[in-house]
Amino acid sequence: MALQTNNTPIAGVVLAGGRATRMSEQDKGLILFKNQPLISYALEALSSVCHHTYINANRNLSAYEEFGLVVICDLTQSFDGPLAGILTTLLHTDTELLVVMPCDTPFFKAEHLQRLLDSRAEYDADIAIAFDGEQLHPLFLALKTSLTENLQDYLASGQRKVSDWLRPLKSVTVDFSGEPNIFININTSDELAALEAQ
Image (cartoon, rainbow, N blue to C red; front, top):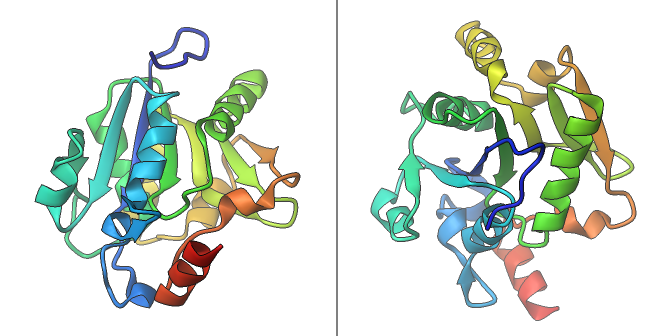
């Protein structure tokens, strides 16, 4: 049973739509880590806090469909970045809240997502953003789906940078500086091998 914030249904999305150029363009979400596809860790985290979970992917769609969830592609085929994946999810869901995380961070858990949701609710912010004590992690978000038109306009203007979109919004940062390792992500084969060895 999914957790709820103020009895509001919550959607979640795992962003797996990038090119993964530093991983020799392998599809990162499908790479095995500890004998499981990387994306499975994000899906497990989201399943505990969300009523509906989507996978945003732009290739290997049949492989992602095997996880039994709705797979949604960007509106364009030009790999326009993570905001394109967030927008296509916003256009697919009818919930009031959306939780976002990338596919390559196996240590970010449901409890961390719940903190994003709780902080957003506490401050009635448009969006809650994860912070590790030194920098923001703008792909770990809890946001109001009422931002859909705002994001559409931003992307239609030709802009793509996540931090620039977030800056004018009513946001709250959620401090995870006590456990910065939850943001460890896997971008290269060397990083994958090093984490496997730990």
